[in-house]
Length: 240
Ligand code: ADP
Ligand code: MG
Image (cartoon, rainbow, N blue to C red):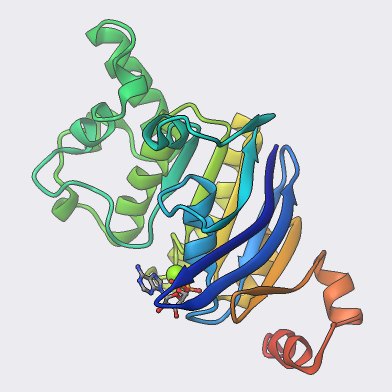
């Protein structure tokens, strides 16, 4: 589905990603876990070429990124950020309407599509559609962010610490809901976090990043039982 082949990125003469090979399976939720500065966001951005890798190739849906314009490639992916995201001067509906895919039919289609997405993320359009982001809680804003990513109709969702700024109760609700949205839309998700509990709860498989390299890749139980090094052992032990 998404295949990263030998991806490296150099900033200021230093490798911040070094020779990353990962295959994300169709329908999988792959978590990228690591401490701040380990290269998680850069790796996520290499997938949709928000950042161009210095070495290596990205393949998605059997297509290789070569020279096609990056903005077209980017449309293959939904993208959810941690904080930024919604345009503050636009209503919830207007924030959804900026997605090009929303504008393919006539204007009733557009409203119906937006209303369906908003209902799915628990924000009925009649009540929330005309609110501005400042009139929503943090959790509700992130729900709109997810709805907007879903509106792209892309089968692959890239999520960069989308719930990190939320209180634990709201975060847990969104984590549970994400798993149901994932199965509803048959999504493939690459999810960046530095939260070990979140990784354990959401992940089919976990990639542990350490200083720009993959320290280990596997399912939670494997990583816990056979950590590749002391760093991973102590990292995963923090959960208890
Ligand atoms: P993480 O998301 O795991 O916190 P990042 O991918 O954001 O890590 O950053 C990895 C490293 O790359 C950090 O050392 C960061 O300072 C550096 N870095 C990220 N983006 C840039 C940039 N645009 N220019 C220079 N250095 C960068
Ligand atoms: Mg980051």
